[in-house]
Length: 500
Image 1 (cartoon, helix red, strand yellow):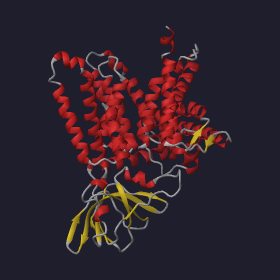
Image 2: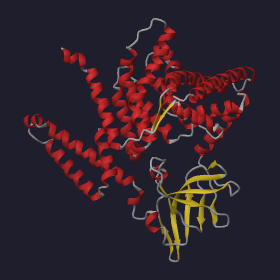
Image 3: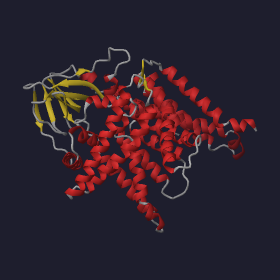
Image 4: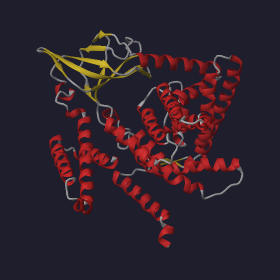
């Protein structure tokens, strides 16, 4: 049922249908669907496709209503309609401030506009910005600003990053610069128990990594790989990873959750010999996945990956062969009902496109070459995974970034297994952090692996053939490209059947 929901969200996004029309269409389809269930048994079997079509319409209508409801501009008290009717505004911080280039940034929710007639309740997200030497603010702080927010301007460069759209997908439509003396702290922030303890644990992890991993650049890379903290990363190094198609290595994503999922399954393998241990294995796997998710900051991309692998783990819990497609669709269905705008998030698109591409194409690509040597076979298997993942993600990269890393196969063949070793080494380092000598050995070994990986990626990036730029394709061309991939795939998969 995820396909009609996606269709409904897409129709509402592009057609901007009002909620009354959506509700009427959905109600009529739902009523007709229930009436079709009371048909005579023979007629119901004969016209079963009508019931299916009506249910499709119902789910598409639900998706469209979800999309309409997620648009903050449809709220009657949206800040864009009330923002000029007062002389002050009340906002509440909803995110821990992030320091970037001498300024703090934090998301907030508008609560009220103060006017001569009193307070007018408003809704909508506001991006706050203030100088580094300003007041220390925490999540939950409530501010009264004498300055009113302004709409986030649209992008002016064709093909450039659309910051307005990026913010809108998070429910943020306005921005506000906090000037000293022009705002008052009404209530100081008090982070809840979970975020406060997660932040404290992340700080301890960063301190342990810096203590045992020599080198500022190596420690910064280790922080990004393990918990997603990227403030200590070298910007030129990040660009090199992006140019060679392996930036997902230093951005907590489905790759990291997949590695952890595989490690947890291996750890729990001896338990499978014990009768009735399936539930215990499931608890360990889910607990490990979600603990790592919390340590990584529980960002939207990490949460999506955790939900996806949780559905896969639950589907495999009974030890029987489960439908991976149903697991993927169920997780996507669940996430889209929580936030339909996940559909337009690049991380959501790439995560599901990569996993779906691996599931569809990996085995067939792997069978192209048969190797008896186990080491060579493992290397080829890693390359088959990398190559298969690119098939459905490449069109999205062309559409979003207007470029394609041409050496992605070589860079991923090196980066994926090495990053896996580094990730496991960091986990081992944290487990041994209470013992200085073994932790020091693991830390120096981890630093060596990181230097090796960074050097290889930067050398690949230095090649003039590492990047193919200037690929500007439209939305229709993206659709046609996927249609072409679909037809070619069906032709290859069905070729033997047609010959018969």
